[in-house]
Amino acid sequence: MTIKHLKSVLFVLTFVTACIYEGNSQVDYDKYPKASNSYFIKDVYAYTNGEMSTSMTNIVIKDGFISEIGPRVKQPKGAIPLELDSMYVYPAFIDVLSHPLKSEEKKDRDDVKFPGLPSDLIAGITPDQSMTVKLKSEKVSLGKMRENGFGISQLAFDHGMLPGSTSIVLLADATDARGLTETTNQVLQFKGAGGVYPNTIIGVMAKFRDLYRNAEAYDSNQKAYSQSATGVSLPTSSQAIAALVPLTQGKETLYIRTKKKLNNYRAIQLKEELGFNAVLIDPVDITGIEQDLKDSRLPIVFSTTMAKEVKSPERVKDSTYSQLDLETLELKEKAFDAYMSRVNQVNRAIDLEIPVAFASLEKSGSDIKESMALMVENGMLESDAINALTMSPAKILGIEKLAGSIAKQKVASLMITDKPYFEEKSNIRTMIVGTEVHEYEAKAKDKKEGSSDIDPVGKWSFTLETPGGDDTGKIIIEPAGDQYTVTIYQDSDSDDQKVINDVDLEGSNMEFGFSVTEGSMSVNVEVTLEFLGENELEGNVKYGDFGTFPLMGDKTSAPE
Image (spheres, rainbow, N blue to C red):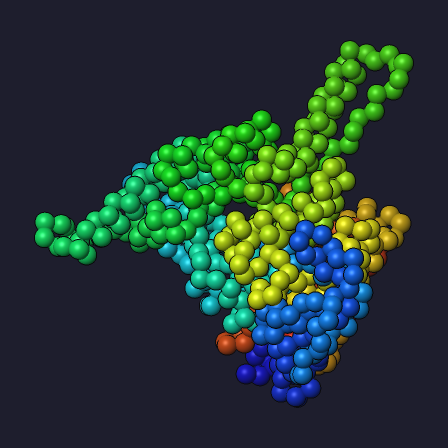
Protein backbone atom coordinates (compact mmCIF):
# COMPACT_ATOMS: atom_id res chain seq x y z
CA MET A 1 0.00 0.00 0.00
CA THR A 2 1.66 3.25 -1.11
CA ILE A 3 1.18 6.81 0.07
CA LYS A 4 0.01 7.77 -3.39
CA HIS A 5 -2.68 5.09 -3.33
CA LEU A 6 -3.86 6.12 0.11
CA LYS A 7 -4.20 9.74 -1.00
CA SER A 8 -6.63 8.60 -3.63
CA VAL A 9 -8.76 7.17 -0.84
CA LEU A 10 -8.68 10.15 1.54
CA PHE A 11 -5.96 12.63 2.36
CA VAL A 12 -6.02 11.92 6.08
CA LEU A 13 -4.24 8.58 5.62
CA THR A 14 -1.23 10.13 3.85
CA PHE A 15 0.82 10.84 6.91
CA VAL A 16 -0.56 7.82 8.78
CA THR A 17 1.03 5.56 6.20
CA ALA A 18 4.22 7.62 6.29
CA CYS A 19 4.37 7.16 10.06
CA ILE A 20 3.92 3.41 9.73
CA TYR A 21 6.63 2.90 7.13
CA GLU A 22 9.12 5.32 8.67
CA GLY A 23 8.75 3.67 12.08
CA ASN A 24 8.39 6.98 13.90
CA SER A 25 4.66 7.11 14.63
CA GLN A 26 3.57 9.84 17.04
CA VAL A 27 2.65 8.98 20.61
CA ASP A 28 -1.03 9.27 21.44
CA TYR A 29 -0.79 11.37 24.58
CA ASP A 30 -4.52 10.90 25.24
CA LYS A 31 -3.90 7.28 26.17
CA TYR A 32 -1.38 5.65 28.46
CA PRO A 33 1.04 3.15 26.87
CA LYS A 34 0.02 -0.47 27.36
CA ALA A 35 3.09 -1.55 29.32
CA SER A 36 0.72 -3.16 31.80
CA ASN A 37 -2.99 -3.82 32.28
CA SER A 38 -2.74 -2.82 35.94
CA TYR A 39 -3.07 0.75 37.19
CA PHE A 40 -2.74 2.41 40.59
CA ILE A 41 -4.76 5.51 41.50
CA LYS A 42 -3.55 7.21 44.68
CA ASP A 43 -5.05 9.91 46.90
CA VAL A 44 -8.34 10.64 45.17
CA TYR A 45 -11.89 11.28 46.32
CA ALA A 46 -14.28 8.53 45.21
CA TYR A 47 -18.03 8.70 44.64
CA THR A 48 -19.46 5.68 46.47
CA ASN A 49 -22.77 4.91 48.17
CA GLY A 50 -24.43 7.96 46.66
CA GLU A 51 -21.94 10.56 47.85
CA MET A 52 -18.41 11.83 47.35
CA SER A 53 -15.97 10.68 50.01
CA THR A 54 -14.59 13.34 52.37
CA SER A 55 -11.27 11.55 52.73
CA MET A 56 -8.90 10.32 50.08
CA THR A 57 -8.63 6.73 48.96
CA ASN A 58 -6.62 4.53 46.59
CA ILE A 59 -7.84 2.32 43.75
CA VAL A 60 -6.18 -0.60 41.96
CA ILE A 61 -7.33 -1.64 38.50
CA LYS A 62 -6.26 -5.01 37.09
CA ASP A 63 -7.18 -6.43 33.68
CA GLY A 64 -10.03 -3.98 33.27
CA PHE A 65 -11.65 -4.53 36.69
CA ILE A 66 -11.44 -2.75 40.04
CA SER A 67 -9.47 -5.15 42.22
CA GLU A 68 -8.90 -3.06 45.35
CA ILE A 69 -10.18 0.20 46.86
CA GLY A 70 -9.33 1.78 50.20
CA PRO A 71 -7.03 4.33 51.87
CA ARG A 72 -4.50 1.68 52.89
CA VAL A 73 -4.28 -0.09 49.53
CA LYS A 74 -0.69 -0.22 48.28
CA GLN A 75 0.62 -0.02 44.72
CA PRO A 76 0.97 -3.56 43.35
CA LYS A 77 4.17 -4.58 41.66
CA GLY A 78 4.07 -3.75 37.95
CA ALA A 79 1.03 -1.46 38.20
CA ILE A 80 1.25 1.86 36.35
CA PRO A 81 0.71 4.83 38.71
CA LEU A 82 -1.74 7.41 37.35
CA GLU A 83 -1.07 11.03 38.32
CA LEU A 84 -4.54 11.95 39.58
CA ASP A 85 -3.73 13.31 43.02
CA SER A 86 -6.66 15.03 44.78
CA MET A 87 -9.02 14.53 41.82
CA TYR A 88 -12.59 13.21 41.96
CA VAL A 89 -13.48 9.72 40.73
CA TYR A 90 -17.03 8.87 39.60
CA PRO A 91 -18.51 5.81 37.95
CA ALA A 92 -18.46 6.64 34.25
CA PHE A 93 -21.87 7.51 32.84
CA ILE A 94 -23.98 4.84 31.16
CA ASP A 95 -25.81 5.75 27.95
CA VAL A 96 -28.95 3.62 27.67
CA LEU A 97 -29.35 4.03 23.89
CA SER A 98 -27.24 5.64 21.18
CA HIS A 99 -27.10 5.55 17.40
CA PRO A 100 -23.40 5.67 16.47
CA LEU A 101 -23.97 4.68 12.85
CA LYS A 102 -26.78 4.74 10.37
CA SER A 103 -28.31 1.55 9.02
CA GLU A 104 -28.84 1.69 5.29
CA GLU A 105 -32.34 2.78 4.46
CA LYS A 106 -33.73 1.39 1.21
CA LYS A 107 -35.33 4.30 -0.66
CA ASP A 108 -36.23 2.65 -3.95
CA ARG A 109 -39.68 1.13 -3.64
CA ASP A 110 -40.47 0.96 -7.35
CA ASP A 111 -40.15 -2.82 -7.31
CA VAL A 112 -42.83 -3.24 -4.61
CA LYS A 113 -45.78 -4.83 -6.46
CA PHE A 114 -48.10 -4.89 -3.45
CA PRO A 115 -47.64 -1.87 -1.10
CA GLY A 116 -49.82 -3.66 1.44
CA LEU A 117 -47.42 -6.62 1.56
CA PRO A 118 -43.83 -5.37 1.17
CA SER A 119 -40.73 -7.30 2.18
CA ASP A 120 -39.62 -6.92 5.79
CA LEU A 121 -36.58 -4.94 4.64
CA ILE A 122 -38.68 -2.41 2.75
CA ALA A 123 -41.12 -2.19 5.69
CA GLY A 124 -38.30 -1.39 8.12
CA ILE A 125 -38.68 -4.69 9.95
CA THR A 126 -35.17 -6.05 10.58
CA PRO A 127 -34.99 -7.31 14.19
CA ASP A 128 -32.62 -10.01 12.93
CA GLN A 129 -30.02 -7.35 12.08
CA SER A 130 -27.33 -7.54 14.78
CA MET A 131 -25.38 -4.53 16.03
CA THR A 132 -22.87 -6.92 17.59
CA VAL A 133 -22.14 -8.44 14.18
CA LYS A 134 -22.15 -5.02 12.51
CA LEU A 135 -19.49 -3.69 14.88
CA LYS A 136 -17.16 -6.50 13.84
CA SER A 137 -17.24 -5.41 10.21
CA GLU A 138 -17.73 -1.64 10.45
CA LYS A 139 -15.52 0.79 12.32
CA VAL A 140 -17.22 3.30 14.57
CA SER A 141 -15.67 6.09 16.63
CA LEU A 142 -16.88 6.23 20.22
CA GLY A 143 -14.35 8.78 21.46
CA LYS A 144 -16.72 11.76 21.52
CA MET A 145 -19.13 9.97 23.84
CA ARG A 146 -16.24 9.03 26.09
CA GLU A 147 -15.01 12.63 26.24
CA ASN A 148 -18.40 13.61 27.65
CA GLY A 149 -18.12 11.17 30.54
CA PHE A 150 -19.75 8.04 29.12
CA GLY A 151 -17.98 4.73 29.61
CA ILE A 152 -20.73 2.31 28.57
CA SER A 153 -23.47 2.54 25.96
CA GLN A 154 -26.13 0.38 24.37
CA LEU A 155 -25.61 0.84 20.64
CA ALA A 156 -28.60 0.54 18.31
CA PHE A 157 -29.65 1.02 14.70
CA ASP A 158 -32.15 3.77 13.98
CA HIS A 159 -33.92 2.86 10.72
CA GLY A 160 -37.48 1.59 10.57
CA MET A 161 -39.98 0.34 13.15
CA LEU A 162 -37.81 -2.63 14.24
CA PRO A 163 -34.25 -1.68 13.23
CA GLY A 164 -32.37 -4.57 14.86
CA SER A 165 -30.84 -5.99 18.03
CA THR A 166 -28.63 -3.84 20.22
CA SER A 167 -25.16 -4.29 21.70
CA ILE A 168 -24.05 -3.10 25.17
CA VAL A 169 -20.39 -2.12 25.00
CA LEU A 170 -17.52 -0.42 26.77
CA LEU A 171 -16.61 2.76 24.90
CA ALA A 172 -13.07 1.59 24.21
CA ASP A 173 -11.04 2.35 21.10
CA ALA A 174 -9.93 -1.26 20.65
CA THR A 175 -12.75 -3.27 19.07
CA ASP A 176 -11.78 -6.44 20.94
CA ALA A 177 -11.90 -4.55 24.27
CA ARG A 178 -15.54 -3.41 23.97
CA GLY A 179 -17.24 -6.64 24.95
CA LEU A 180 -19.19 -6.23 28.18
CA THR A 181 -22.15 -8.59 28.05
CA GLU A 182 -23.81 -10.91 25.55
CA THR A 183 -27.20 -9.44 26.44
CA THR A 184 -29.05 -7.97 23.45
CA ASN A 185 -32.36 -6.13 23.21
CA GLN A 186 -34.77 -4.87 20.56
CA VAL A 187 -35.92 -1.36 19.62
CA LEU A 188 -39.41 -0.33 18.49
CA GLN A 189 -40.01 3.03 16.85
CA PHE A 190 -43.36 4.52 15.88
CA LYS A 191 -41.98 5.14 12.43
CA GLY A 192 -43.96 4.23 9.31
CA ALA A 193 -42.33 2.80 6.21
CA GLY A 194 -43.64 5.54 3.89
CA GLY A 195 -45.65 4.48 0.85
CA VAL A 196 -45.98 0.87 1.96
CA TYR A 197 -47.50 -0.96 4.93
CA PRO A 198 -47.09 -0.08 7.73
CA ASN A 199 -46.97 3.61 6.87
CA THR A 200 -48.90 4.99 9.88
CA ILE A 201 -48.44 4.73 13.63
CA ILE A 202 -51.63 2.65 13.92
CA GLY A 203 -50.24 0.41 11.18
CA VAL A 204 -46.95 0.05 13.07
CA MET A 205 -48.81 -1.03 16.21
CA ALA A 206 -50.93 -3.55 14.28
CA LYS A 207 -47.88 -4.97 12.51
CA PHE A 208 -45.96 -5.31 15.76
CA ARG A 209 -48.87 -7.16 17.40
CA ASP A 210 -48.96 -9.55 14.46
CA LEU A 211 -45.20 -10.17 14.55
CA TYR A 212 -45.17 -10.66 18.32
CA ARG A 213 -48.04 -13.15 18.35
CA ASN A 214 -46.51 -15.07 15.45
CA ALA A 215 -43.24 -15.21 17.39
CA GLU A 216 -45.11 -16.62 20.40
CA ALA A 217 -46.81 -19.22 18.20
CA TYR A 218 -43.53 -20.15 16.50
CA ASP A 219 -41.83 -20.61 19.88
CA SER A 220 -44.69 -22.75 21.19
CA ASN A 221 -44.75 -24.89 18.06
CA GLN A 222 -40.97 -25.29 18.15
CA LYS A 223 -41.06 -26.52 21.76
CA ALA A 224 -43.88 -28.96 20.99
CA TYR A 225 -42.06 -30.27 17.93
CA SER A 226 -38.82 -30.80 19.89
CA GLN A 227 -40.69 -32.92 22.46
CA SER A 228 -42.61 -34.99 19.96
CA ALA A 229 -42.95 -34.54 16.22
CA THR A 230 -46.05 -36.73 16.14
CA GLY A 231 -49.05 -34.69 15.08
CA VAL A 232 -47.06 -31.44 15.15
CA SER A 233 -46.22 -29.59 11.96
CA LEU A 234 -42.63 -28.54 11.29
CA PRO A 235 -42.14 -25.02 12.71
CA THR A 236 -41.66 -22.36 10.03
CA SER A 237 -41.13 -18.63 10.36
CA SER A 238 -39.43 -15.61 8.87
CA GLN A 239 -36.09 -14.28 10.15
CA ALA A 240 -37.92 -11.35 11.73
CA ILE A 241 -40.33 -13.57 13.65
CA ALA A 242 -37.55 -15.87 14.86
CA ALA A 243 -35.54 -12.85 16.02
CA LEU A 244 -38.43 -11.74 18.26
CA VAL A 245 -38.69 -15.06 20.13
CA PRO A 246 -36.24 -14.00 22.91
CA LEU A 247 -38.44 -10.96 23.49
CA THR A 248 -41.53 -13.14 23.92
CA GLN A 249 -39.58 -15.37 26.33
CA GLY A 250 -38.62 -12.42 28.53
CA LYS A 251 -34.94 -12.78 27.67
CA GLU A 252 -34.84 -9.40 25.93
CA THR A 253 -36.35 -5.99 26.58
CA LEU A 254 -38.11 -3.78 24.05
CA TYR A 255 -36.85 -0.20 24.07
CA ILE A 256 -39.76 1.85 22.70
CA ARG A 257 -38.86 5.26 21.33
CA THR A 258 -42.00 7.39 21.44
CA LYS A 259 -40.96 11.04 20.79
CA LYS A 260 -44.55 12.22 21.32
CA LYS A 261 -46.87 12.39 24.32
CA LEU A 262 -49.63 10.36 22.65
CA ASN A 263 -47.13 7.66 21.71
CA ASN A 264 -46.33 7.21 25.40
CA TYR A 265 -49.91 5.98 25.91
CA ARG A 266 -49.52 3.70 22.89
CA ALA A 267 -46.37 2.19 24.37
CA ILE A 268 -48.16 1.53 27.67
CA GLN A 269 -51.05 -0.05 25.76
CA LEU A 270 -48.78 -2.44 23.83
CA LYS A 271 -46.88 -3.47 26.95
CA GLU A 272 -50.04 -4.19 28.94
CA GLU A 273 -51.66 -6.02 26.05
CA LEU A 274 -48.73 -8.29 25.10
CA GLY A 275 -46.81 -8.50 28.39
CA PHE A 276 -43.23 -7.99 27.22
CA ASN A 277 -40.47 -6.25 29.16
CA ALA A 278 -40.17 -2.64 28.03
CA VAL A 279 -38.37 0.67 28.56
CA LEU A 280 -39.71 4.02 27.38
CA ILE A 281 -37.18 6.02 25.35
CA ASP A 282 -37.30 9.75 24.58
CA PRO A 283 -40.87 10.41 25.82
CA VAL A 284 -40.31 14.19 25.32
CA ASP A 285 -43.13 15.21 27.68
CA ILE A 286 -44.65 13.10 30.46
CA THR A 287 -46.66 15.91 32.05
CA GLY A 288 -49.98 14.55 33.27
CA ILE A 289 -49.18 10.88 32.64
CA GLU A 290 -46.64 10.29 35.40
CA GLN A 291 -49.00 8.06 37.39
CA ASP A 292 -49.88 6.02 34.30
CA LEU A 293 -46.18 5.41 33.73
CA LYS A 294 -45.65 4.44 37.36
CA ASP A 295 -48.58 2.02 37.25
CA SER A 296 -47.20 0.45 34.06
CA ARG A 297 -43.81 -0.07 35.75
CA LEU A 298 -42.06 1.37 32.72
CA PRO A 299 -38.56 2.79 33.28
CA ILE A 300 -38.16 6.12 31.50
CA VAL A 301 -35.06 7.12 29.56
CA PHE A 302 -34.89 10.81 28.69
CA SER A 303 -32.83 12.40 25.93
CA THR A 304 -29.63 14.11 27.05
CA THR A 305 -30.77 17.10 24.98
CA MET A 306 -33.14 19.42 26.83
CA ALA A 307 -35.97 21.37 25.26
CA LYS A 308 -34.94 24.65 23.68
CA GLU A 309 -34.69 27.29 26.39
CA VAL A 310 -37.66 29.61 26.88
CA LYS A 311 -36.97 32.83 28.75
CA SER A 312 -39.27 33.91 31.54
CA PRO A 313 -41.39 36.87 30.39
CA GLU A 314 -41.39 39.90 32.65
CA ARG A 315 -44.56 41.63 33.77
CA VAL A 316 -43.93 45.29 34.50
CA LYS A 317 -45.65 46.24 37.75
CA ASP A 318 -48.39 48.87 37.53
CA SER A 319 -48.17 48.88 33.72
CA THR A 320 -51.23 49.07 31.52
CA TYR A 321 -51.24 46.48 28.72
CA SER A 322 -53.32 46.56 25.59
CA GLN A 323 -55.51 43.52 25.00
CA LEU A 324 -53.12 42.28 22.32
CA ASP A 325 -50.02 42.81 24.50
CA LEU A 326 -51.71 41.06 27.42
CA GLU A 327 -52.63 38.04 25.29
CA THR A 328 -49.08 37.89 23.93
CA LEU A 329 -47.64 38.05 27.45
CA GLU A 330 -49.96 35.29 28.66
CA LEU A 331 -48.90 33.07 25.75
CA LYS A 332 -45.24 33.62 26.63
CA GLU A 333 -45.95 32.79 30.26
CA LYS A 334 -47.67 29.54 29.24
CA ALA A 335 -44.71 28.67 27.01
CA PHE A 336 -42.32 29.30 29.89
CA ASP A 337 -44.41 27.21 32.29
CA ALA A 338 -44.45 24.35 29.76
CA TYR A 339 -40.66 24.61 29.37
CA MET A 340 -40.10 24.51 33.14
CA SER A 341 -42.47 21.55 33.42
CA ARG A 342 -40.24 19.64 30.99
CA VAL A 343 -37.10 20.72 32.86
CA ASN A 344 -38.56 19.34 36.10
CA GLN A 345 -40.21 16.20 34.70
CA VAL A 346 -37.22 13.98 35.48
CA ASN A 347 -37.37 15.07 39.10
CA ARG A 348 -41.11 14.37 39.21
CA ALA A 349 -40.50 10.86 37.90
CA ILE A 350 -37.82 10.31 40.56
CA ASP A 351 -40.22 11.51 43.27
CA LEU A 352 -42.69 8.84 42.06
CA GLU A 353 -39.88 6.24 42.28
CA ILE A 354 -39.96 5.61 38.53
CA PRO A 355 -36.54 4.36 37.33
CA VAL A 356 -35.00 7.07 35.12
CA ALA A 357 -31.89 7.31 32.98
CA PHE A 358 -30.59 9.14 29.90
CA ALA A 359 -29.79 8.36 26.27
CA SER A 360 -27.64 10.32 23.82
CA LEU A 361 -29.55 8.93 20.80
CA GLU A 362 -28.26 10.69 17.65
CA LYS A 363 -25.99 12.95 19.69
CA SER A 364 -22.74 12.09 21.46
CA GLY A 365 -23.87 13.34 24.86
CA SER A 366 -22.08 16.68 24.52
CA ASP A 367 -24.97 18.51 26.19
CA ILE A 368 -25.33 16.16 29.17
CA LYS A 369 -23.53 18.37 31.68
CA GLU A 370 -25.50 21.47 30.71
CA SER A 371 -28.77 19.53 30.86
CA MET A 372 -28.03 17.96 34.25
CA ALA A 373 -26.79 21.26 35.71
CA LEU A 374 -30.06 22.91 34.65
CA MET A 375 -32.09 20.22 36.41
CA VAL A 376 -29.94 20.43 39.56
CA GLU A 377 -30.31 24.22 39.51
CA ASN A 378 -34.08 23.72 39.50
CA GLY A 379 -34.29 21.35 42.43
CA MET A 380 -32.89 17.94 41.51
CA LEU A 381 -30.50 16.48 44.08
CA GLU A 382 -26.97 15.99 42.78
CA SER A 383 -27.05 12.42 44.09
CA ASP A 384 -30.23 11.76 42.06
CA ALA A 385 -28.58 13.23 38.96
CA ILE A 386 -25.49 11.03 39.31
CA ASN A 387 -27.63 7.98 40.03
CA ALA A 388 -29.66 8.61 36.85
CA LEU A 389 -26.40 8.48 34.90
CA THR A 390 -24.82 5.48 36.63
CA MET A 391 -26.58 2.89 38.80
CA SER A 392 -30.11 3.49 37.49
CA PRO A 393 -29.17 2.86 33.82
CA ALA A 394 -27.06 -0.11 34.93
CA LYS A 395 -30.16 -1.66 36.52
CA ILE A 396 -32.31 -0.84 33.49
CA LEU A 397 -29.76 -2.58 31.22
CA GLY A 398 -29.34 -5.48 33.66
CA ILE A 399 -25.61 -4.88 34.17
CA GLU A 400 -25.67 -3.60 37.76
CA LYS A 401 -23.42 -6.47 38.88
CA LEU A 402 -20.82 -5.33 36.36
CA ALA A 403 -21.07 -1.55 36.34
CA GLY A 404 -22.79 1.55 37.70
CA SER A 405 -20.74 2.03 40.87
CA ILE A 406 -17.17 1.99 42.16
CA ALA A 407 -16.67 -1.33 43.91
CA LYS A 408 -14.38 -4.35 43.89
CA GLN A 409 -14.82 -6.78 40.99
CA LYS A 410 -16.75 -4.26 38.91
CA VAL A 411 -15.64 -3.18 35.46
CA ALA A 412 -13.21 -0.29 35.45
CA SER A 413 -15.46 2.33 33.90
CA LEU A 414 -14.46 5.55 35.63
CA MET A 415 -14.66 9.31 35.06
CA ILE A 416 -12.09 11.49 36.84
CA THR A 417 -12.66 15.24 37.20
CA ASP A 418 -10.49 18.05 38.57
CA LYS A 419 -13.39 19.39 40.69
CA PRO A 420 -16.73 17.94 41.78
CA TYR A 421 -18.68 17.33 38.56
CA PHE A 422 -21.39 19.94 39.12
CA GLU A 423 -19.00 22.60 40.34
CA GLU A 424 -18.49 25.51 37.95
CA LYS A 425 -15.55 25.07 35.56
CA SER A 426 -15.00 21.42 36.46
CA ASN A 427 -13.37 19.34 33.75
CA ILE A 428 -13.17 15.66 32.87
CA ARG A 429 -9.44 14.97 32.97
CA THR A 430 -9.30 11.19 32.63
CA MET A 431 -11.59 8.40 31.44
CA ILE A 432 -10.82 4.78 32.25
CA VAL A 433 -12.68 2.18 30.20
CA GLY A 434 -11.54 -1.37 30.83
CA THR A 435 -7.81 -1.49 30.22
CA GLU A 436 -7.70 1.85 28.39
CA VAL A 437 -6.82 5.16 30.06
CA HIS A 438 -7.60 8.40 28.20
CA GLU A 439 -6.42 11.83 29.33
CA TYR A 440 -7.92 15.22 28.42
CA GLU A 441 -6.79 18.80 28.78
CA ALA A 442 -8.90 21.18 30.85
CA LYS A 443 -11.32 23.01 28.57
CA ALA A 444 -11.28 26.79 28.60
CA LYS A 445 -14.66 27.90 29.87
CA ASP A 446 -14.27 31.63 29.41
CA LYS A 447 -15.46 32.38 25.93
CA LYS A 448 -14.10 35.31 23.99
CA GLU A 449 -16.37 38.31 23.84
CA GLY A 450 -18.96 37.76 21.17
CA SER A 451 -17.84 34.16 20.53
CA SER A 452 -21.32 32.79 21.13
CA ASP A 453 -22.54 34.86 18.17
CA ILE A 454 -20.06 33.36 15.69
CA ASP A 455 -21.72 31.82 12.64
CA PRO A 456 -19.63 28.86 11.40
CA VAL A 457 -21.68 28.36 8.23
CA GLY A 458 -19.61 28.73 5.06
CA LYS A 459 -16.71 27.30 3.09
CA TRP A 460 -13.36 27.24 4.87
CA SER A 461 -9.90 26.62 3.38
CA PHE A 462 -7.51 24.88 5.75
CA THR A 463 -3.92 23.73 6.06
CA LEU A 464 -3.09 20.63 8.08
CA GLU A 465 0.48 20.17 9.30
CA THR A 466 1.55 16.51 9.12
CA PRO A 467 4.87 14.66 9.35
CA GLY A 468 4.68 14.13 5.57
CA GLY A 469 4.21 17.83 4.86
CA ASP A 470 1.28 20.22 4.76
CA ASP A 471 -2.07 19.14 3.33
CA THR A 472 -4.68 21.62 2.17
CA GLY A 473 -8.39 21.19 1.72
CA LYS A 474 -11.85 22.56 2.30
CA ILE A 475 -14.40 22.31 5.09
CA ILE A 476 -17.98 23.21 4.19
CA ILE A 477 -20.32 23.84 7.10
CA GLU A 478 -24.03 23.96 6.34
CA PRO A 479 -27.09 24.32 8.59
CA ALA A 480 -29.29 21.25 9.07
CA GLY A 481 -32.30 22.38 11.10
CA ASP A 482 -30.87 23.43 14.45
CA GLN A 483 -27.74 21.34 13.82
CA TYR A 484 -24.91 21.42 11.26
CA THR A 485 -23.54 19.21 8.49
CA VAL A 486 -19.82 19.22 7.68
CA THR A 487 -18.25 18.21 4.35
CA ILE A 488 -14.46 17.83 4.24
CA TYR A 489 -12.15 17.05 1.32
CA GLN A 490 -8.60 17.46 -0.01
CA ASP A 491 -7.85 20.10 -2.64
CA SER A 492 -6.07 17.54 -4.82
CA ASP A 493 -9.13 15.27 -4.89
CA SER A 494 -12.31 17.31 -4.44
CA ASP A 495 -14.49 14.43 -5.66
CA ASP A 496 -13.54 12.28 -2.65
CA GLN A 497 -15.58 13.94 0.11
CA LYS A 498 -16.55 12.95 3.62
CA VAL A 499 -19.94 14.13 4.94
CA ILE A 500 -20.48 14.24 8.71
CA ASN A 501 -23.92 14.73 10.26
CA ASP A 502 -23.02 14.28 13.94
CA VAL A 503 -21.53 17.71 14.68
CA ASP A 504 -21.30 19.41 18.08
CA LEU A 505 -21.05 23.20 18.38
CA GLU A 506 -20.62 24.85 21.78
CA GLY A 507 -19.86 28.56 21.73
CA SER A 508 -16.95 28.98 19.34
CA ASN A 509 -15.87 25.32 19.50
CA MET A 510 -16.93 22.62 17.05
CA GLU A 511 -16.22 18.89 17.24
CA PHE A 512 -16.91 16.05 14.80
CA GLY A 513 -15.42 12.71 13.86
CA PHE A 514 -15.40 10.03 11.20
CA SER A 515 -13.56 6.85 10.25
CA VAL A 516 -11.44 6.08 7.21
CA THR A 517 -10.90 2.55 5.94
CA GLU A 518 -8.56 1.20 3.25
CA GLY A 519 -8.32 -2.57 3.05
CA SER A 520 -7.66 -3.91 6.54
CA MET A 521 -6.52 -0.51 7.86
CA SER A 522 -9.04 1.72 9.61
CA VAL A 523 -8.42 5.00 11.40
CA ASN A 524 -10.80 6.98 13.61
CA VAL A 525 -10.43 10.71 12.95
CA GLU A 526 -11.52 13.30 15.56
CA VAL A 527 -11.57 16.98 14.61
CA THR A 528 -11.72 19.90 17.07
CA LEU A 529 -12.12 23.44 15.72
CA GLU A 530 -12.18 26.86 17.37
CA PHE A 531 -13.54 29.82 15.41
CA LEU A 532 -11.44 32.94 15.97
CA GLY A 533 -13.86 35.62 14.92
CA GLU A 534 -15.87 35.45 11.71
CA ASN A 535 -13.14 34.49 9.22
CA GLU A 536 -10.46 32.41 10.98
CA LEU A 537 -10.29 29.04 12.66
CA GLU A 538 -7.70 26.82 14.24
CA GLY A 539 -7.86 23.35 15.69
CA ASN A 540 -6.45 19.86 15.96
CA VAL A 541 -7.01 16.60 14.15
CA LYS A 542 -6.46 13.38 16.05
CA TYR A 543 -5.73 10.31 13.91
CA GLY A 544 -6.32 7.18 15.97
CA ASP A 545 -3.12 6.18 17.72
CA PHE A 546 -0.88 8.08 15.29
CA GLY A 547 -1.00 11.45 16.97
CA THR A 548 -2.68 14.85 16.97
CA PHE A 549 -1.80 17.53 14.43
CA PRO A 550 -2.58 21.26 14.13
CA LEU A 551 -4.95 22.76 11.58
CA MET A 552 -5.46 26.40 10.58
CA GLY A 553 -8.06 27.85 8.23
CA ASP A 554 -9.77 30.89 6.73
CA LYS A 555 -13.32 31.46 5.60
CA THR A 556 -13.58 31.86 1.85
CA SER A 557 -17.30 32.10 1.10
CA ALA A 558 -20.82 31.08 2.02
CA PRO A 559 -21.83 27.50 1.06
CA GLU A 560 -22.35 27.02 -2.64
